[in-house]
Image (tube, rainbow, N blue to C red; front, side):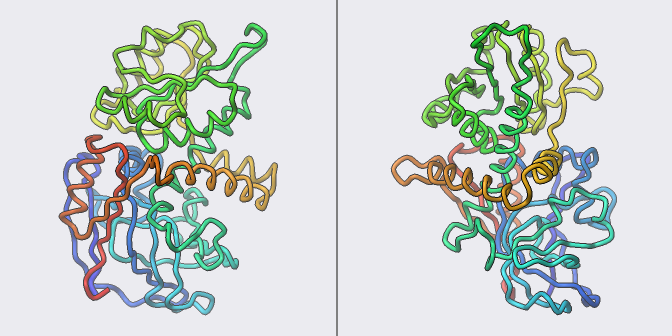
Length: 377
């Protein structure tokens, strides 16, 4: 059964191609997973944008130096297994390549998870090497797979951003007036990770959450109800320059970041999350020239490691599950949904969705689920 690989040129994300290859026999202890469907969002564009810097191209090596397989989150089923602890037919959720199939090398097994122990993944972030066994996964429900693929990895990042900022007191200090409320400014406010973060921040009730967005997405952001205010990118003058502020940058827009750093004398922390404005990245090294705190990339696995050490794995999972259920209940409320799912099949559809995500186009309420399965699969 041939495998279809969707590849992106590492140095030019506008260029894509599909490769068909014959499958190699499994080595002892390996499993072949048929990837049924995966989400494609601005988050995946971020993986590609930081593919070299953060190691994302290394998870699923394409074997071609110029071309990479973009990691995605989705669901699959074990098609073949030479591992005694993993049965054919088992359903898994996790980190997959943009492909129709993937080969995993299970290492540590628990009733809830399979850890991929492929040698090339040994030095990569462990959180991405874990595959959840749907039959025992506390967050899994069969009728919400699309929502899980679209929102679960994004909301985990959102929840960790909120936790990191709260853990650090929003970087306020003794110079702040008693009773001062921190301000969180989020760029690309219509993106799913941004509004997940806004939702988590709003639950605190003591943070002013300001969303920055383009004019076409203003009404959507205002309708969410989790932003204290929504401003256009040309309205930065309305921000209180001296208020204790953290900037959470989902856009990765270098010119916007500079304007904010120059405007906000009260800026306490500048957090870099993503790159939804992929064509407007700051030039390399520009961060060193900005006034105020130096922009710092937020690496979610580091906060996971810290909190699991402090709380324990079980308590961490329980807190996450509680937050996840509250968020998805609101995001999928039939009366006022934040998310509508659009399903796509085949390489041409994937290429079109990739370009839409890369360019930041499309309906902010729409979430794309894609399948590259071959008909025989």
